[in-house]
Length: 328
Image (tube, rainbow, N blue to C red; front, side):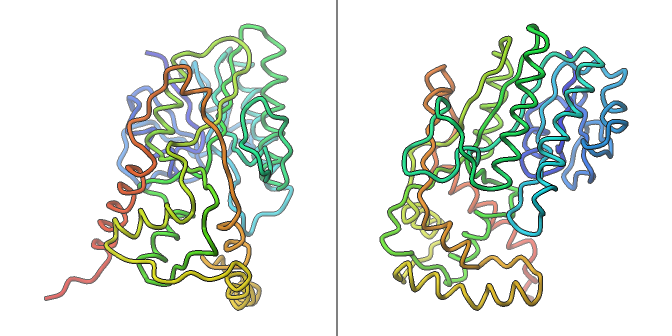
């Protein structure tokens, strides 16, 4: 069996690839060593550094690169940092692939390339990113399209997932679960805006499904789970799994005002707090992305959106018990 180079494989999504891929045929290139149990080859390195990537692919029978490495946080990252990794780092990967005759690359992009829009996004739409992150991911896609065009035997799969959640994730969905668990969460207005989300085990399975069917040229796929839920529905599913109730609904304008003190704290402390006006506005913004293309090609996820949310809450409760002091 050939070997896969997984860049950024020490992170949240990477941890789930380690569970699904034979570790003896997996090379993980990352700036940090995994904190989860693994048997794969780990190489400390930076995809922005040509020597690191060349060392990772040299004499290892790499046939496919799955690129997870990215700058993606919405706090504390400058405009150029996004492009240094998401565009220039991708160019370095392509250069190494060319030098070592690697023909297959799978690139984790993002639905952020579409920008915020009222209509449901599909792969046929022209991307109009409205954030440095989305623009840098689109720039990375362009690098790969150019690389594929140079040699007609090359294959590129670009995956554009929505917000991805699941065990080992401590970002957006974890913050939402924690807020609902604490009783501080409130519905924002009607909370009827759709929020496309994706459970990590489904995302990994989708990528491996596409890997097995790679064809020459460039293929692009959105990924979001079904059913598509509203913000209110997501909150209620989580609350039920926690055996809690969301008792408060506030108008959107008031909700944004409630975030102002946190904005001030962020400015004064430089800390990325889980509550801010930007996060509250984001919660109330609809994001509806269609994954009809991959489903039409025969992909079947193992879990529904609701199943995934419940599984993440189960993981959250387990982790909370681990860190809580034992009562004698």
